[in-house]
Length: 325
Image (cartoon, rainbow, N blue to C red; front, side, top):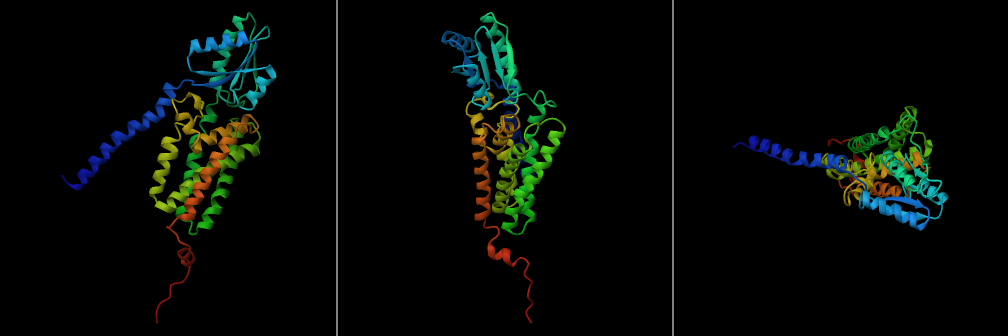
């Protein structure tokens, strides 16, 4: 068997193994996703809270993590701070508190459950949405579609800066400038079509940090490994990070530890930070900001320790070649 045939056979076998794994990564969260320890709140007498907790456990064991609150104002404040996705006020004035901006899927689920809670107490359900979705994106589909462009922008910016730039200090300066410019134009378009409707500055900062958190590691990996670094970044940030990002569906819908892992990667952290900026005035974004800052630091660390371009080489790139006489 010739070397060419062996290489082609190896490629086919490799694809036959890798592609099903990639499909599994992308399809499983969408087809098998269901809530696990989803935080919600309940306001009412102790007996009423226990009744709601028991009803939820019977309906779907392990799906919800129920927290008791003293009054409706405390529940609303918890939802606004992203401590819970919403909850129920049990009693004669039954109320379901939702946050569509946090997750349209969870909001719909809570409204359905709230109707049953209200029926048990003989009351009529009222719904309070403390974080409505954008008018142009009531189902949140447009917001969920912003994940892929974030990866593409970050990867393209990082790779171009590393492959085209000659000096590390130039690359280091270009990355945040490029991330800020791309983020501003992207937020502008998303606002124009109605996908985003929050504070522009907060959304811009969140998206710029997300793009830079991908661009910096990509640029660092390319500086260390050459073009192979792009493949490593694509594997980590896209093939693994994208299905675990928890943007279209909450991280609590992912099985096992995968939801938490996704929030430690740039795309998941970017989705959380941008959602907080768009619908909650930045509340609940501290952990995501820390994750993004760490990835940015890792990228710049790679640039610093890169042996691909030493300072001596950089300084001599533009020096004229001397011909001996």
